[in-house]
Length: 239
Image (cartoon, rainbow, N blue to C red; front, side, top):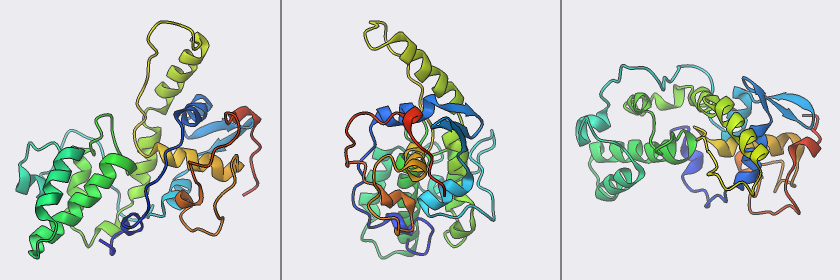
Protein backbone atom coordinates (compact mmCIF):
# COMPACT_ATOMS: atom_id res chain seq x y z
CA UNK A 1 0.00 0.00 0.00
CA UNK A 2 2.73 2.43 0.98
CA UNK A 3 4.44 1.93 -2.39
CA UNK A 4 1.43 3.45 -4.19
CA UNK A 5 0.58 7.16 -4.58
CA UNK A 6 -2.37 6.56 -2.24
CA UNK A 7 -0.01 5.94 0.71
CA UNK A 8 -0.57 9.39 2.35
CA UNK A 9 -4.19 8.40 3.00
CA UNK A 10 -3.38 5.26 5.02
CA UNK A 11 -2.94 6.72 8.51
CA UNK A 12 -4.70 10.08 8.31
CA UNK A 13 -7.11 11.16 11.05
CA UNK A 14 -10.79 11.57 10.10
CA UNK A 15 -11.33 14.68 7.98
CA UNK A 16 -14.06 17.13 8.91
CA UNK A 17 -16.21 18.08 5.95
CA UNK A 18 -16.65 21.65 4.84
CA UNK A 19 -20.20 22.93 5.04
CA UNK A 20 -22.34 22.57 1.93
CA UNK A 21 -22.84 26.35 1.91
CA UNK A 22 -19.14 26.88 1.10
CA UNK A 23 -19.26 24.44 -1.80
CA UNK A 24 -22.45 26.06 -3.11
CA UNK A 25 -20.76 29.47 -2.95
CA UNK A 26 -17.87 28.21 -5.06
CA UNK A 27 -20.08 26.39 -7.55
CA UNK A 28 -22.33 29.44 -7.94
CA UNK A 29 -19.30 31.44 -9.05
CA UNK A 30 -18.32 29.09 -11.86
CA UNK A 31 -17.75 31.01 -15.10
CA UNK A 32 -16.76 28.58 -17.84
CA UNK A 33 -14.62 25.46 -18.12
CA UNK A 34 -12.22 25.42 -15.17
CA UNK A 35 -12.56 29.15 -14.42
CA UNK A 36 -14.31 30.59 -11.35
CA UNK A 37 -14.95 34.20 -10.34
CA UNK A 38 -13.32 34.59 -6.92
CA UNK A 39 -13.28 38.04 -5.34
CA UNK A 40 -14.22 39.52 -8.73
CA UNK A 41 -11.18 37.88 -10.33
CA UNK A 42 -11.18 35.01 -12.82
CA UNK A 43 -9.24 32.14 -11.27
CA UNK A 44 -8.42 28.82 -12.96
CA UNK A 45 -8.82 25.51 -11.13
CA UNK A 46 -6.02 23.49 -12.70
CA UNK A 47 -4.69 19.93 -12.73
CA UNK A 48 -1.59 21.24 -10.94
CA UNK A 49 -3.83 22.66 -8.19
CA UNK A 50 -5.40 19.25 -7.63
CA UNK A 51 -1.97 17.58 -7.64
CA UNK A 52 -0.72 19.92 -4.89
CA UNK A 53 -3.91 19.53 -2.88
CA UNK A 54 -4.00 15.73 -3.01
CA UNK A 55 -0.25 15.09 -3.28
CA UNK A 56 -0.63 12.67 -6.18
CA UNK A 57 0.84 12.28 -9.72
CA UNK A 58 -0.58 14.18 -12.67
CA UNK A 59 1.73 13.04 -15.47
CA UNK A 60 2.68 9.89 -17.40
CA UNK A 61 0.07 7.23 -18.26
CA UNK A 62 -3.57 8.37 -18.72
CA UNK A 63 -6.42 6.84 -16.72
CA UNK A 64 -9.74 6.60 -18.56
CA UNK A 65 -12.98 6.93 -16.61
CA UNK A 66 -15.59 6.85 -19.37
CA UNK A 67 -16.54 4.98 -22.53
CA UNK A 68 -18.74 2.04 -23.46
CA UNK A 69 -15.94 -0.55 -23.44
CA UNK A 70 -15.18 -1.97 -20.00
CA UNK A 71 -12.34 -4.45 -19.51
CA UNK A 72 -12.87 -7.13 -16.89
CA UNK A 73 -10.64 -6.33 -13.92
CA UNK A 74 -8.97 -8.76 -11.55
CA UNK A 75 -11.44 -7.75 -8.85
CA UNK A 76 -14.38 -8.52 -11.13
CA UNK A 77 -12.84 -11.85 -12.12
CA UNK A 78 -12.58 -12.81 -8.45
CA UNK A 79 -15.82 -11.41 -7.06
CA UNK A 80 -18.05 -11.60 -10.15
CA UNK A 81 -18.19 -9.60 -13.37
CA UNK A 82 -21.56 -8.06 -12.44
CA UNK A 83 -20.46 -7.00 -8.95
CA UNK A 84 -21.26 -3.38 -8.08
CA UNK A 85 -18.47 -2.27 -5.77
CA UNK A 86 -20.46 -0.09 -3.38
CA UNK A 87 -19.03 0.96 -0.03
CA UNK A 88 -20.89 -1.81 1.76
CA UNK A 89 -19.73 -4.48 -0.70
CA UNK A 90 -16.09 -3.35 -0.50
CA UNK A 91 -16.20 -3.30 3.32
CA UNK A 92 -17.52 -6.85 3.33
CA UNK A 93 -14.73 -8.15 1.09
CA UNK A 94 -12.08 -6.31 3.10
CA UNK A 95 -13.27 -7.90 6.34
CA UNK A 96 -12.94 -11.31 4.72
CA UNK A 97 -9.42 -10.69 3.36
CA UNK A 98 -7.64 -8.63 6.03
CA UNK A 99 -5.16 -10.77 7.93
CA UNK A 100 -4.63 -13.31 5.17
CA UNK A 101 -1.01 -14.10 4.28
CA UNK A 102 -1.86 -15.29 0.77
CA UNK A 103 -0.30 -13.05 -1.91
CA UNK A 104 -3.50 -12.92 -3.95
CA UNK A 105 -5.46 -11.86 -0.87
CA UNK A 106 -2.88 -9.22 0.04
CA UNK A 107 -2.92 -7.78 -3.49
CA UNK A 108 -6.72 -7.73 -3.58
CA UNK A 109 -6.81 -6.09 -0.14
CA UNK A 110 -4.68 -3.26 -1.56
CA UNK A 111 -6.93 -2.99 -4.62
CA UNK A 112 -10.10 -2.94 -2.51
CA UNK A 113 -8.71 -0.33 -0.12
CA UNK A 114 -7.78 1.97 -3.01
CA UNK A 115 -11.16 1.33 -4.62
CA UNK A 116 -12.90 2.31 -1.38
CA UNK A 117 -10.89 5.55 -1.30
CA UNK A 118 -11.76 6.27 -4.94
CA UNK A 119 -15.45 5.48 -4.44
CA UNK A 120 -15.96 7.57 -1.33
CA UNK A 121 -13.54 10.48 -1.53
CA UNK A 122 -11.27 10.91 -4.55
CA UNK A 123 -13.55 10.07 -7.48
CA UNK A 124 -17.10 9.20 -6.37
CA UNK A 125 -20.03 9.40 -8.73
CA UNK A 126 -23.71 9.86 -7.87
CA UNK A 127 -24.12 6.41 -6.27
CA UNK A 128 -20.75 6.60 -4.46
CA UNK A 129 -19.20 4.04 -6.77
CA UNK A 130 -16.04 4.33 -8.82
CA UNK A 131 -16.22 4.47 -12.60
CA UNK A 132 -16.00 0.82 -13.76
CA UNK A 133 -13.46 1.80 -16.41
CA UNK A 134 -11.07 2.91 -13.65
CA UNK A 135 -11.11 -0.38 -11.71
CA UNK A 136 -9.00 -2.07 -14.40
CA UNK A 137 -6.13 0.30 -13.56
CA UNK A 138 -5.80 -1.36 -10.15
CA UNK A 139 -4.78 -4.68 -11.73
CA UNK A 140 -1.07 -3.84 -11.92
CA UNK A 141 -0.18 -2.59 -8.45
CA UNK A 142 3.40 -1.80 -9.51
CA UNK A 143 2.20 0.52 -12.28
CA UNK A 144 -0.35 2.41 -10.16
CA UNK A 145 2.32 4.94 -9.18
CA UNK A 146 2.90 5.73 -12.88
CA UNK A 147 -0.71 6.57 -13.73
CA UNK A 148 -1.91 10.18 -13.98
CA UNK A 149 -4.67 9.88 -11.36
CA UNK A 150 -4.96 13.60 -10.70
CA UNK A 151 -5.99 14.31 -14.31
CA UNK A 152 -9.03 12.05 -13.80
CA UNK A 153 -9.88 13.62 -10.43
CA UNK A 154 -9.74 17.09 -12.01
CA UNK A 155 -11.94 16.05 -14.94
CA UNK A 156 -14.54 14.48 -12.64
CA UNK A 157 -14.84 17.57 -10.43
CA UNK A 158 -15.55 19.72 -13.50
CA UNK A 159 -17.64 17.04 -15.25
CA UNK A 160 -21.03 18.57 -14.52
CA UNK A 161 -20.03 21.73 -12.67
CA UNK A 162 -21.91 23.91 -15.18
CA UNK A 163 -25.23 22.17 -14.51
CA UNK A 164 -24.62 22.27 -10.76
CA UNK A 165 -23.85 26.00 -10.96
CA UNK A 166 -27.10 26.74 -12.79
CA UNK A 167 -29.02 24.72 -10.19
CA UNK A 168 -27.45 26.56 -7.25
CA UNK A 169 -28.16 29.94 -8.85
CA UNK A 170 -31.77 28.94 -9.54
CA UNK A 171 -32.29 27.83 -5.93
CA UNK A 172 -30.76 31.09 -4.68
CA UNK A 173 -33.15 33.17 -6.80
CA UNK A 174 -36.13 31.23 -5.47
CA UNK A 175 -35.17 32.02 -1.89
CA UNK A 176 -35.23 29.89 1.23
CA UNK A 177 -38.93 30.54 1.93
CA UNK A 178 -40.11 29.08 -1.38
CA UNK A 179 -42.13 25.97 -0.50
CA UNK A 180 -41.39 24.16 -3.77
CA UNK A 181 -38.82 21.34 -3.44
CA UNK A 182 -35.27 22.56 -4.05
CA UNK A 183 -33.52 20.90 -6.98
CA UNK A 184 -30.03 19.53 -6.44
CA UNK A 185 -27.32 18.38 -8.80
CA UNK A 186 -24.59 15.97 -7.76
CA UNK A 187 -20.97 17.06 -8.21
CA UNK A 188 -18.71 14.19 -9.20
CA UNK A 189 -15.22 13.68 -7.82
CA UNK A 190 -13.45 15.18 -4.82
CA UNK A 191 -15.45 18.32 -4.05
CA UNK A 192 -13.33 18.67 -0.89
CA UNK A 193 -10.42 19.62 -3.16
CA UNK A 194 -12.45 22.51 -4.58
CA UNK A 195 -12.95 23.94 -1.07
CA UNK A 196 -9.24 23.58 -0.26
CA UNK A 197 -8.40 25.30 -3.57
CA UNK A 198 -10.50 28.31 -2.55
CA UNK A 199 -8.84 28.52 0.86
CA UNK A 200 -5.35 28.21 -0.65
CA UNK A 201 -6.02 31.24 -2.83
CA UNK A 202 -7.88 33.38 -0.27
CA UNK A 203 -7.02 32.25 3.29
CA UNK A 204 -10.67 32.84 4.21
CA UNK A 205 -9.80 30.90 7.37
CA UNK A 206 -6.24 30.56 8.69
CA UNK A 207 -4.32 27.40 7.71
CA UNK A 208 -3.06 24.99 10.35
CA UNK A 209 0.39 25.31 8.76
CA UNK A 210 1.64 26.43 5.36
CA UNK A 211 4.54 23.99 5.65
CA UNK A 212 2.40 20.86 5.26
CA UNK A 213 3.16 19.44 1.79
CA UNK A 214 -0.28 18.12 0.89
CA UNK A 215 -2.50 21.18 0.92
CA UNK A 216 -5.43 18.91 1.80
CA UNK A 217 -4.12 18.65 5.37
CA UNK A 218 -3.35 22.36 5.85
CA UNK A 219 -6.93 23.27 6.55
CA UNK A 220 -9.24 22.38 9.41
CA UNK A 221 -12.82 22.31 8.18
CA UNK A 222 -13.92 22.24 11.81
CA UNK A 223 -12.41 25.69 12.39
CA UNK A 224 -15.45 27.91 12.23
CA UNK A 225 -15.37 31.35 10.70
CA UNK A 226 -17.79 33.89 12.06
CA UNK A 227 -20.54 34.17 9.51
CA UNK A 228 -20.80 32.65 6.06
CA UNK A 229 -17.84 32.78 3.67
CA UNK A 230 -18.98 35.02 0.81
CA UNK A 231 -16.88 34.46 -2.30
CA UNK A 232 -17.56 37.95 -3.67
CA UNK A 233 -15.99 39.48 -0.55
CA UNK A 234 -12.78 37.43 -0.67
CA UNK A 235 -9.40 38.74 -1.75
CA UNK A 236 -7.22 36.47 -3.89
CA UNK A 237 -3.73 36.03 -2.46
CA UNK A 238 -0.63 36.27 -4.63
CA UNK A 239 0.72 32.71 -4.90
